[in-house]
Image 1: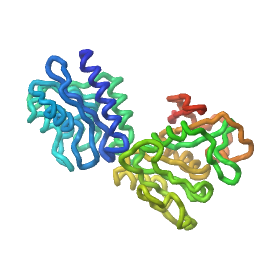
Image 2: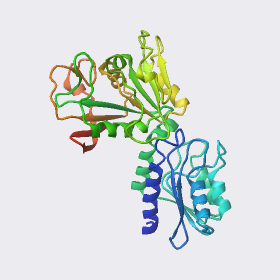
Image 3: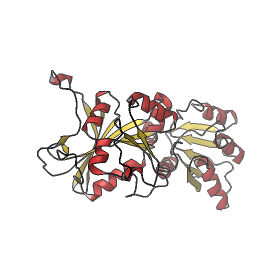
Image 4: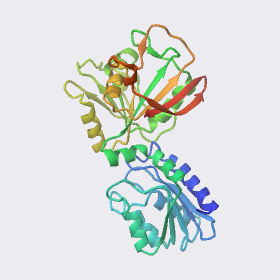
Length: 343
């Protein structure tokens, strides 16, 4: 069992890693805390934007700025230190050169270029290497669920977001949906949108609501790529989704192969993919089994006639219905946030 001070530092490192949301993509969100051999905190940091220092280097710089000597100390890291030279040098080498004696890692890196090689290099250099408990490993993996998806499946983690009424409507019959939920839920939705490397909608949503689909209700260092499926070329030139900040991409006729789209985005470094669309496009993702998580905001309102969450094929038997597991239910303002994953 890990000492209490190291468990506390793992919690702090996870909190630091959360600060890399909206910043570090396509790199994983990583936090690092440096301790002296007797448990005093010497430095801390998290991964910066792509091409800039990783968490371990930021923690070493923090310790140096404090005038702390890290030799013989402990590095507590949420993800296995990298062992390859990408845009930045290997973090393993930085820890070894600094004289760190012990490294505690929350979870191994799924990147095939690392995948245990970082731990092996540290061990070969004489450092004591330990893995954290299962709960901490799960938390670190959850924080980087999109990175794990891209490394292990070659595609992003797909989160489908929708705001619905008590009677399951997402919009009026003409497609207008602004606003079903309250301000708190909308801000919370932007916090989840910030996690995404790309956000997708369909031309029907653009024509009905003229959304921006950027991140503006919470702070962010970067904007997700905004993608619109427009098979008939109906995109208005003045559509707000085409305006800054951020980049927008229109996918036209013959280019709406959803699995191929996900594979392409994965090859471009998109870790989490956010779908905010009408019932037809949402139904297409669900029917193809491509949705990894549902993010639903349910408002305490009744709409009556309107559009459903998704247009799905009619079932011949209720036993054929696709089942979902509720992983979270939390009030957000006057609304309820539900997160579900496939059984």
